Length: 354
Image (cartoon, rainbow, N blue to C red; front, top):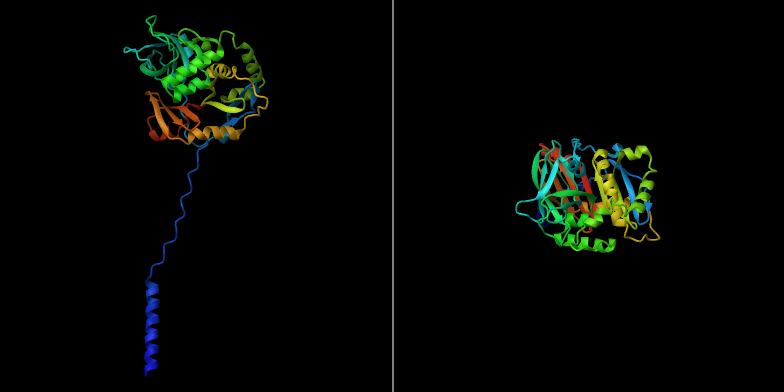
């Protein structure tokens, strides 16, 4: 009688164990982590041509290439004036603001067209010479307070309250200081460039360096650059939208416009700025052509940083990113549809070594 009872007890325990096991929930299958978002290609819609070497300066032309463009909505093409043509036609006035602030000026656009201005464009006069402090577009028939930086440390007088254009763009390092650092850093860079260019003066103004871009001081360099670029096929020249600039083999600047039309208006000014940067550098003996990897590494450093709004008008929004060694300053058109504005490419982008 005892054995059947033991067998019955064992069977009961087995059934109970099976039931308990059956009631234990199985762990949910692990959900795979979402795939990382595909990083946007900052050079989408463009192609890098063969680098051109002139002493310490390497220029890699950037051309528009629709085959590599993304599906992003295009920015509407806007017929803009640039600073020099607007001032030549007397459609723009730049003057000291009423409170006479070092880092702000009044920009009056009397034209019915927007005016595109580049950070680093040199304007002379007023109480002290300045450079434009932000890339932006000034709306037509409007008055704006525009950020600027002083490039004349030792003058503040009443000789004039208005400015003219020096028809020059500051060299890359100075443009970078204006976009990503402080007034003190701008003054330091001006002083160092004046020493290098042998243009030291009583008020420590950048004016003489700027004037060298048009007075023949750089004509030997400029001819070498012009001759080298003159060998580019006409088809490539017509599609050019910017340059990658390297100094002694190290990428220093990328300037890129949305349209060849706007680029052509500013190309000569940009090239003179590049020459102003390179002329004081002794060419290294082992300079190698700039590679696309170098360009992407340079750009990606800035693109990895958070975006900050820098300055806005009703025509455009300027924003910047500040990476470890590269900064980005760019301009987008203001659009009524925020989604379309976000998707649209920048009108202009500058990547600059810090």
